Length: 154
Ligand code: CTP
Ligand code: ZN
Image (cartoon, rainbow, N blue to C red; front, side):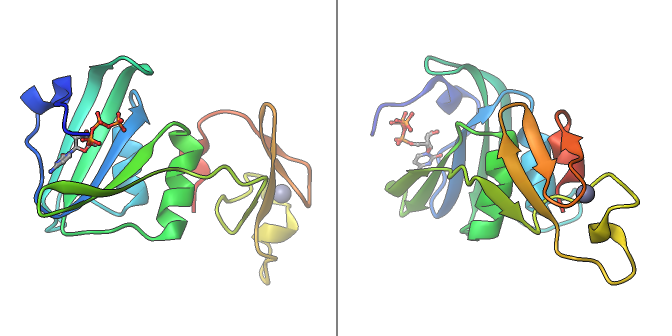
């Protein structure tokens, strides 16, 4: 728990907040997008990408001071970073560490790309996707999202 990873050379420990670790390499910016962090928000955020990691080869890391994540945010992160771990930091110590969950169904999490889908009408049904082997399948119109899932996250 106290061993310093190679990322310690790149980004400092934080005092209070959340460290999202073991993010699939290359997905850090999508994680920031899910969290609504843009260049103009005021949060203190550090990002490392393509850091060497024993477990997954290479990984990205996002550290956010003074923020804990909501479940809806973690569930979205799970879609693009299935191996991510969420570490809650208080007074520099990791007080909680958990992996992300992989639900079999996603309600209101992704937008169906099919313009004719009932979830995209004037009075839309809530989007509902089933997690299948090769992606996400719309419960209503069977549309399969198999790549660039990040672009469809609501
Ligand atoms: N971390 C941090 N600031 C702190 C404490 C930890 O930024 N004050 C970061 C570490 O750099 C690491 C993550 O939070 O990226 C988890 O910390 P820790 O559990 O100590 O590291 P490991 O044991 O390497 O984690 P794991 O077993 O999940 O790989
Ligand atoms: Zn659909």
